[in-house]
Image 1 (tube, rainbow, N blue to C red):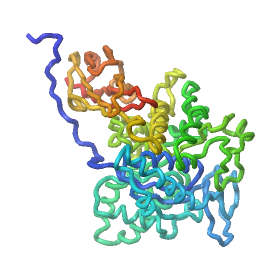
Image 2 (image 1 turned 45 degrees about the vertical axis):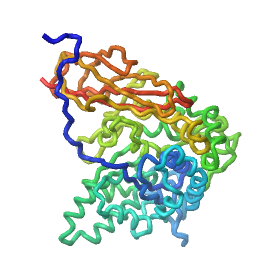
Image 3 (image 1 turned 90 degrees about the vertical axis):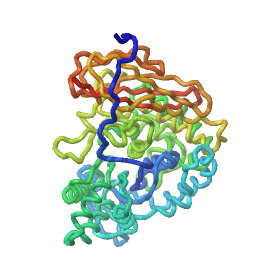
Image 4 (image 1 turned 90 degrees about the horizontal axis):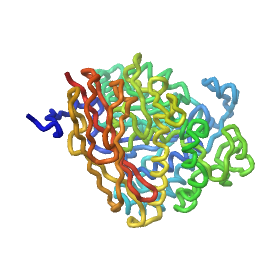
Length: 501
């Protein structure tokens, strides 16, 4: 008989390939309306530019920001909130277009130092070469082709079959225009069916709210098979509303004591990051309630002190693309740095947050719509601090994240009552001590119970598959590995157990 203390024999199999196969760094195009939180998200994007392939940076419009046509044409928003707030306008809070080039130029000054930490940071010259102006005259304007829409169109039609993540930081109108141009060109031709399928297999839209009506009125109607990841709740913990969305215990990671040194000590790019009371009025704002040290003491978002975080409401769109070891890129329902999204029961190509994507918030002891994003605040802010330091520090004075591997497959078939041993192995380029923590992401499980984890602070985890698990249930176990560098950095590995009879 087998020794009961030994690992029982398991059949280790990889699960079926997911629908969104990814063989290289994720391709992405960012569309942005240039709001102050877009500026801050853009700076953090640049600090992570080695993690994905930035294939386009497109300035677009939104319900909050549009340029006007320069002819005095008046416009009323299609979105009820901005219709009530601003009425008829010829333009609205337009920050201009130069801001993006100024940020790229500042990035160019620190990029040589960033390359000391990763050779994959692109040059500023490359980023300038993929920057375009899209449809910016009015909210939702998609009547004419622009350099930005033509650029997106060409990328959608190129021969690269890898997924192309279209980040929507403002309105979807420039993306909608690119799709409309493709439709106009191919709709009544023999190639249409092939072209339509190719685009739908490639394009994945990650939208932070609806900031114009073009997705609802055009894209969802004419391109229903394009996948969309829709974040309407979870992003708030990184947006203006953060003081109410984030538990007070995590506020220190967003307050001036933490943020100030990051912004002031790490070179010209971080100096351009908007924070409360920094004396730097955001471009285009009708009323500046952010930079004035007096006005920040009480405004519509709360009471703040100098260098407090304002907003990066769009950052979850690229957090989703960072490979931290959580396997969320191809499985948005798994949860990761960009939050957790659940497939819609009525629109199978739509993944969304909301009531079905809530996680348990241990600070409030309640289920929470924002917590699938909030749970990563500490880790992401430490990552921000470390990468900001990469702008100025040599490699041997900075901290770098550990690398985590499993000694077995990431997906395992198991039997009820089986004794299981999971083993992780992590390394750290800086020679820091590593701390392990295994935990069950039970909100993601189809298994409804809790797994008893013995010694979860060790690289090797031993446990028994619960006897009440049903055939077909899955159980998600994650190992977090955090180094002892300053700031401490974390990476992960996820094991998905599929329960068989």
